[in-house]
Amino acid sequence: MSTCCIGHTVYVIAVVMVVLALPVGCAKVNSERTDALPTDTSLPTNTPIPSTETPSKEEGKASPEAQPGENTFPSPNGSAGGTIAFTSNRDGDYDIYVMKSDGSDLRQLTDNRGTEGYAARTPDGTRIAFYAYSDMTTWSIYIMDDNGSNQQRLTSNEGTRDSAPAWSPDGKRVAFGSERDDSYQIWVMSADGSDKRQVGPVSGGGPDWSPDGTQIAFHSEGEGDSEICVIHVDGTKQQQLTENDAADWWPTWSPDGTQIAFMSNRDGNWEIYVMKIDGNGQRRLTNNNSEDRMPAWSPKGTQIVFCSNRDGNYEIYLMNADSSNQRRLTNNSAQDIQPAWLP
Image 1 (cartoon, rainbow, N blue to C red):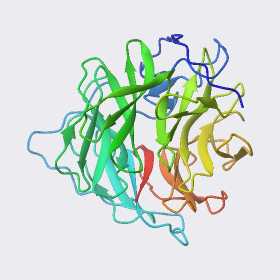
Image 2: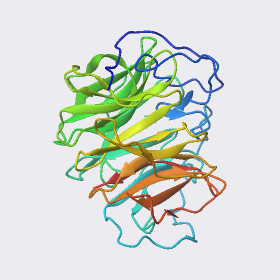
Image 3: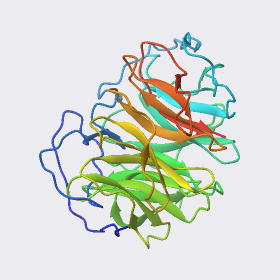
């Protein structure tokens, strides 16, 4: 394993949707590649994202009650329990929804003007962190109660785009990705929004805490391809876990701390992969001609939820941790993305 570089090289590319590109980090230059360009905080190109034009909602008009789509796939056998949160534009703009891990009991948690997404619940299950914005200039981290009430803003830097929050195992801190000062960074703050600090002089996004709370996994780019790296929370001992000419994104630790799932386009399109925490034993879990993205482990580590457009548009899917029994949980004409398993 090689050690992540820590420079401040700026990797700027003009795209139609300009969002976090996560430069500087662990890889080599390939100026001709565009498929790894993110279009939303921690998402590569072609992932459906909120539009720069926020749909308006009629004053005083309540959103229709969320109804689960007709599921043409078998319900999960041996469901791992808990609830699954995801982002969907089925109500006109992007909001946060939750459902049981068998796809039933769908509920809408946010219904604001603008965009909300990247839901992450505290280990005790009482609060949810998320990002929100009404334009492409300023994105902020919020928290709310588990039922969607009592929404509070934790970050509010004008012109800064903060997103992809992740709770520490003890529920006392929140890590998040932030685009500021022409670079893409990992930050940590206390659960009340105080004591904000950057984690090391690195650029990256999609942070996820190790189960023991000592490290943060993230995806980082050097002057080109993105790689999966880990860093201690104090900013020391950076380590690169992947090394190839493709893009590796969105790492997520297994609950027992022995594996990291991630997405990669190394085989021509985005698929879900898994590896040991030292980077060894990398293997592909999905294998199709569509795009499989953003894995998240079940609380017991027996299943993985992800989003895929294999049936025409992005829906939420579930599979066993060994890649077996892949099945769809949502079924509608909207885009369902950014899944997260909530304890």
